[in-house]
Image (tube, rainbow, N blue to C red; front, top):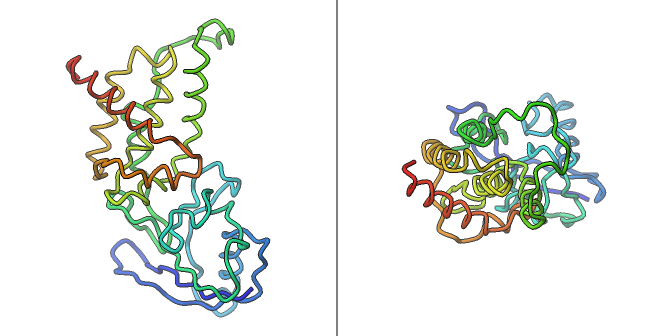
Length: 247
């Protein structure tokens, strides 16, 4: 498979940056997208050009590091993470445009690498349970309704990749925030801090420069873990309750 790659190159945050075109041949349809970039970087090393910087870690669709905008779609044409996207999803001779996440809250560090530490600060603002539970309790000692436990586990699959933000025309992180709020709010252990949690996390979300949600739904369509849109409804419901309680 022969490809034309238009890749965003940016030396540092102060650099204006721009797209640069590369021709790459010998790409197997069985390669992952990141393996294809590895092949490109080997080619660049051989010619003395600086390799393309991109984030990756587990390459198993778990860590959320592989954040790339591919032909204008977060993680590319399939609903999966970039590391789990395979080159069989593209055609021989195709031109592929590869860019970093585009959001004010995710500034570009270099090439395709963005600073997503804003997510970390949102979690630090309240995405945890601080109650001292002592030693590990018996699994069934704190009863939880099956439907609530199931929902908590399902939304806890959010890996914080930022695809929701990249796909949103407003650059909102409401799907990410809603997943974290719902995950903890559905379980008994999360109730004591529920109001303060949502108030603090929403305040941090806004302080980081993320946009507001207008329920377009691009976020959940791009989410590799298929987090449902109704977590945003839960977020708004919890926030209204917190405000009524004086938070």
